[in-house]
Structures are given as C-alpha cells and as structure tokens.
Image 1 (tube, rainbow, N blue to C red):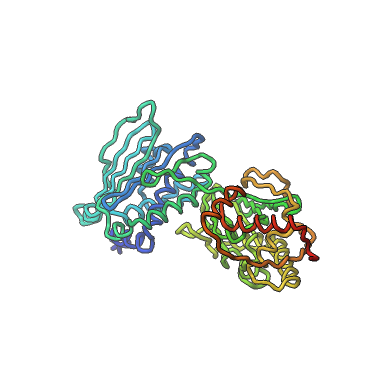
Image 2: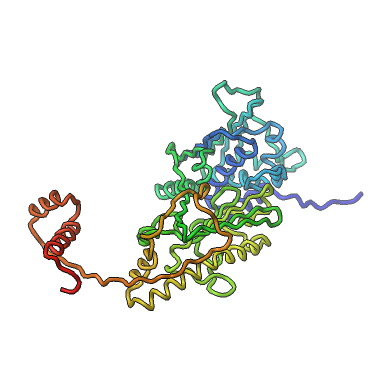
Amino acid sequence: MNEMVSFQPTKKLFIDILTRDIHIRDCILELLDNSVDSYTRNNINDKREIRLNFNKNELSIFDNCGGIDKKKLKEDVFRFGTEDFLNNVPTIGLYGIGLKRSIFKLGELIIFETDDGKDYCKLEIDVNDWLKKKDKEGNEIWDIELTETSKTKLTNEQKPFTKIIVKKLRYETIESFIPKFETNLKDTVKIYYSRYIQREKINFFVNNEKQSGFEIKVKASNDLKPVKVEDEYEGIKITIYCWIDLQEDQKRVRKEKGRQGWNVFMNERLVIFDDTSEGTGWLGKQPFLPKFHSIFNQFRGVVFLNTNDPSKLPIKTSKDGFNTESRIYNHLLNLMVKVARPIIDFLSDKYNKQKEKIDGKEEELLNAISKDGEEEKKIIETSIDNIKTKYQSVFTPPEIVIRPIIPLSTISYKKPKRQVDVMKKVLKVKTNWEVGEKTFNYFWESEGLDEEN
C-alpha cells in the first residue's frame, strides 16, 4: 500500500494568506463590488440600491440586486477558487476570493442572508469555531451547515436581496473607523461607481447617506472637437475619448475632480482617476508622453474597457490600478499615447509660442493659453455619453493665434465702509473690487480718455 504525503493547507494559513495584504477600505469595496456584480449577473434593468453601514460594533451591507441561488450559495459562493464567476458577463470579480478574504479580514462573526425569490438562506459563521472544527481522524472540516433555509420570505413589495452583517470586528477594523475614513470611503464610492449612479442604475448609501456620483463633462467647440477612437483587443472592447477642456479659470479647474489627465473605466468602474503618472503614459521619454506639466492642464482623456471575461482586464487584484505586466496593458498604453500625442503637441506649441511673446509668470502664461481665442468659440458642454458635436478620429489642431497680453496694474485705496456700501447699492455690485473697477471705468469714459492721452 502506497503511503501518502499530505499537501492540504490549514484553514488558518489560508485565512492568513488571503487577508494579509488587503486594506480595510479595499475589503469594503470588495463587498460592494459583489453586490454590483449581482446586479449585472441577474440582468437587472430597473433601479436598485446598496446600503453600507458601519460603526465600531458591526458592519453591514445590504443589496436588493437579485439575491443568490441556493445551489450556488452551497456549492460556489464560499468555495475558494470557484470558476462560477467567469460566466460570460461584464463583472469585475474573479474566482470568488474577494468575499471570503473581506469578511475574514473584517471580523470574527459573519451573518449571511439571501433570498432570490425562490429560497431564503441564512448562514452564520463563527470564524474561531470554524477554525477548530475537525473530523474524527483529525482532518479539518471546511464545510459549514446552513443555519436556516426555507421557501422565499419575500412579500410582493420586496425585491430579492443579500445581506451581510459582520460582528466581533477585529482590532484593525475598529481602529480604521474614524471620521476621515468614512469621508474618504464616500468619496471613493462616488468616483468608483459614478457610472452606476449617474445612469440611475443603483443608489448607494453609506451610513444612511445617499451618494451622488460625479459626471465627466466634455467641453469642446467646432475648432476643438473631441476625439473618439474604438478598438478591440483579445476580447476587450476599447473606447478612448480625448479633448481639450475649454475653461477660463484653470486655477479653479485644477481643484475639481475629474478635470485632469486620464480616467479609466473597467466594466463601468472608474478604476484609474485623474491620473498623470507614468502608468498612463507620462514617462517623459519617447515614444511615450512627456512628464505631466501644468501646460497640459487642459488635456482630458477617458478610456472605457468592456469585456464579458473579467480575467482579461488589465487590473490589479486590489482593483485600484493597472496590472502593468498584462499584454492588454501594453497594447492599451500605446493606443492611449497615439491618440493623445497630437493634443499634447498642440498644447506644447501653444505654450512655447505664448512664452516667446510674453515675458510673464507661469500662472499668467497658463491663463493666457487657456483663454486664447475662447471668446470667439461656441463652447459645447455635455456628458460623455451624449456629446452633441462630431468626433474626430485624429485630433486636428487649429491655427495657433497669439494675442498680446495687456499689462495690468493694481489700484488700492481705502474709503469709509459706509460710503463703499452706498456705492455697492448704486452700482449694483457685491464686492469692493467691483466698486473700484466700475468707478475707474466711469471716470475714464466720462473724461473721454483713450490710450493716447
């Protein structure tokens, strides 16, 4: 009789490996992603909701995005390495690892409930008790018996749901739940799931506060039309939009979200946001883009990657950036650079010509090139899904016309506040500087002055 050597891992080792390098925030996003993936897998078209609540005692997440089939719950959902998730739908989860490592990282007692409209199931997992369970021969028992199961409990008004409650939170989880963590998480939800929110597919609530997604706006004109390029590579549909954002106040724009560099969506999640790093091509050497500089503040690039096989997406396991070792990443990066290059060259030329004309400060130069000629252009602002002007397949730059900048001087003086307030009412203005500007213009015009005086 052959003697066998065991290669079976222990449950403790499995949990330690799974949870070691994942952050609490990423655990929560994994749970949210599972709910969003459920919306997609169940082919839901009407609006649903996902509710996340947490404090230092427990965390819960509820969604009415279709529930989980009893057979899948028993055979796949809690199984490590299942391939059921690769079922030809545009999700983002792979192998079902995210759910397990998230709940094990967050706490030691998990209550899992789901009702898909046919069956109701409840599973309670006491992690410490589960770790100790062994059979008579001393082998670890991996399976857990359903706590409760029955026919559906849904009423006519209720939709199929899944609810997860995590109690006995781990020390690391409790220490993470501070006001700043909640604020940052809300911002992440607004950004990461902006497409689902803006397209009114799913309402997201964090600690009972509804989150509003931000929308990427395209500002273009007949002279500066946006560029759209479509491609397909190894089963991934690629759509790239690039344009020059026509704004008068670039200082204000730089503070706004979604107004700089590249934004990359993967299966409708905004995975890479406002990126100007080497990962999106700003390497500072040929054949890539130059290092990002303030002269490129007007550049906007948005990429959509869509596939029914999420294993092909060039995404890190943490779902917050590119997997730069994938073949699709290299193909995509070259395409992004190719599409963006004419716009970057145009902005560089415009800056250099303006710099030759004006010996000014950097901020003055940036405002000059952003405003140049815009008063003559009809600016069209619209959402990226509803652009009302024609696309270009390749950016065609207009002729660069540099207008001289009139040197400005500051006038400063003080007058009694009572008199200034009276002047504001007479001139119908709200600020002191407007009073000064209006009175200066009045004097200039009434005296008939011109540049030659």
